[in-house]
Image (cartoon, rainbow, N blue to C red; front, side):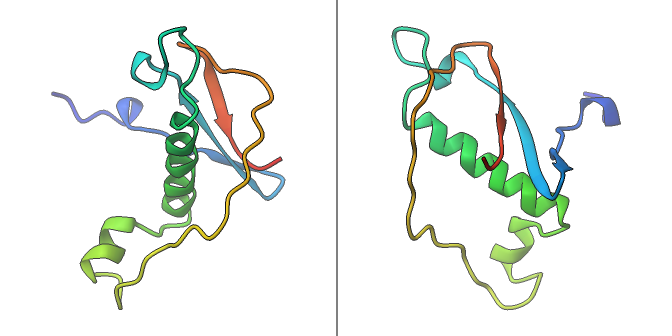
Amino acid sequence: MVNDAQDSPQSGRFVGGEHRFACRVYYEDTDFSGSVYHASYLRFLERGRTELLRSLDIHQAAIHSGEAGPIFGFVVRAMKIEFLKPARMDDLITVGRR
């Protein structure tokens, strides 16, 4: 295994104050038809949130271990998802805010 910066995961980017994170849809994210299983979208959103924090130099491992100060957690209070169009296997989707 080689530790090469080109192989490291990307944390997304900020565009006009909005964080955007690209995710590839893998087989494991899909249902029998090759479309993204509805619950998989929540995993994509969580990855985007994690990468947003990472890009702000906030690391969840340090938060959970207490290394970053008092231990605290994030709570999702509400969520509204509107499924407009299915993502399919091998698609590259962008997690952001609309």
